[in-house]
Image (cartoon, rainbow, N blue to C red; front, side, top):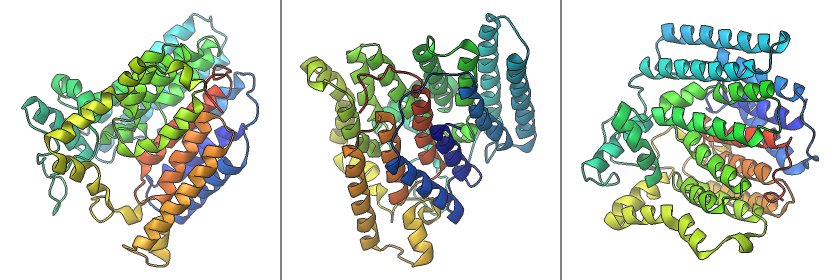
Length: 426
């Protein structure tokens, strides 16, 4: 089995059953993955074979087993599992039974239809999940339409004893959600759209590199990754963030640098912690000084101008929501049950609220970050490794945080069979 595929499978196996909540076995596996990514060098890109995609089918099969949202009724979960099982059978038959190549187009349409059915089933059978991400991503765009500052407002209460007066994301999050809230009264439709556009762009990139059937396998795997519908139910931003990275990648590889730079700026305008990836990305863009002009710099900083605008409206509220609320003492999530090394320390040597423990974690993160930065590795592996490092050494990382790492690893696995990265890599 391809080493990169093995790492991707291992990471999903470590986070899916427990939803990224702490347990010793999962943390041990993730540390093993991190060591593997840090030490072992990438091999040369290899020629694509249809068998290269078959191992990936483990992921939607695993996703079938764990399909369902936390607040979704059991009847609809059972229906969803039957539908996914039926889809897997159809896709398998296309591999076993010789069919005309033009049927692959119908298979692609079928996969999309099944994805939409499962997505709608998930949303409509979990209309009001008891999670603050859904609430704030729905209400923040509405407050904006009313002329209110989302960073200065209170939201509907979700958790007892916690004042819902925070919006911890950057402005691109509610700007992206705005049309979906207005049209469907639910921000989660934005995730469906993000996944569909992402796979469409990935298919465009690999259309001449991978045969049609294998391309459909990749489509199936991407749309039906394990717990992807849990991500949908909870309205986590990670698939949307990934969409903007894929848009950047697509336009960069097609030499439309202006569009690429604009989407890169928006990529950094959803979640503040993503800024740690900027040095790696700048390092990976070869001949940067030749392609960056003043006009392109303006395009890159345009999304940050929007961020600055909301800072100007109410600096205190903005800083409190976006930065100060990331303090471990203010986070509403059960951070000492997250899948991180600080959780391990808390459970073994009782270092709760120990600032020295946090500082030690930051120091190790920075040292290993520098180690990754100086390595001559492929850019997607470096991005994946840095994200994984951040999750492990920081105090707040659950399933969705590691899911974003999986998306980057999945993309790197695809580009393992392509040389289109000759101007974008180590």
